[in-house]
Structure formats: C-alpha cells, structure tokens
Length: 212
Image (cartoon, rainbow, N blue to C red; front, side, top):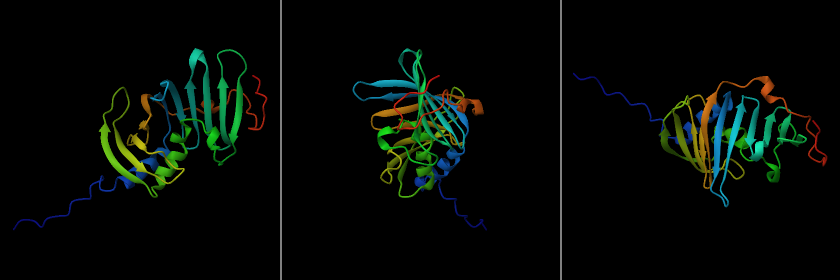
C-alpha cells in the first residue's frame, strides 16, 4: 500500500511581505563594511561612491565627492550627524537630530535611511504590498541575494522600489524610479574607531562650522 501523501511545506514566496520582513529583521542586526555605487538618472545624471560602515546600533556613510571632498553621515545612539570633509580647509560637523529623533525631511541625508529607518519599517511588515523579484547571483566576495519589489508602504515609510538582501541581511541593491544603489565590495565588520567623528558636531541651529 503506497504511503499516505504528506503535505508540502508552504512556499517561502507565498507571502513575500512576510519574507521581506524576516530578512529585514536580520538586516537590522547585520554588521559589515561595504562599498556601494550610487547612480541617479535625474537631470543632470549623478554618480557617487558610498562607503558604508554598519552595526546593529550605528551606521556611517562616507559619500565621495569631487576633488577629494566627501560628506560623512552618521547615525548612532547619541543622534544623527553630518560632516563636510573637504580636501583642504576646515572640517565641519552638524547635529541633525537627537537620540531616537527623526531627521527633518528637508535635512534628511540621502541614503542613510536605507540602513536605518527603512529597515525598521520593512521589519515591522505592516501594510506592505510586496512581490518577489528574480534573485541576484553572488560574485566578487558578495553572496547571492534575494530580491523583493516593495509596491506600497505606509506614508512616510520605506520608498517603493526593489530591495535585495543576502541571507545574513546585507543590502546588496536598492533600485528606485530614478536611482540605484549597488554593493560592489564587502568587508568585515567596522571598528569602534570608524565611528569617531572628525570634529565635535555643533547643534543644528548653529551657523558657525566646527574647527579642526
């Protein structure tokens, strides 16, 4: 007599919103250093390189500019900061928000939310409309990743687009209507020294830059 049929486990793609929430929860605790390219199709088109240092409680983005200048964006338990690091001249750092406070929309540094509040919204999984996308193959030391199309999210939450994560929660690609962020190199977890601001940040209301 043939054995009784057993029920197959539900496919992980049966509820992509749940799957995305699960990997986003892992991503919130991920620690790594990565180099990303950021390209925008706006007029005029823009391209930059962003080095990201991330742990479960801190994130720092170094956005390379022209002529050796770059902008540093850091979020940690003490607040959110942005620093201008020119190739010559004085450095300056500014406090954008206190601990746990949202950054004003008109001052929100481009890209930092992908590694902070966006992950919180995705991990909650509330009121998200999600579809699966083809996975991305690994290479150059970067593991393969699973991709999700976020079609709709609560107002003020994560931006609709395609998000790709490795099984360990590393963001490998984020693609939106007019921009794309792509991981090109992956390294070990950052050190405490990677989160030391170059100068003491001034309050947001201050008009005088910090001195080196």
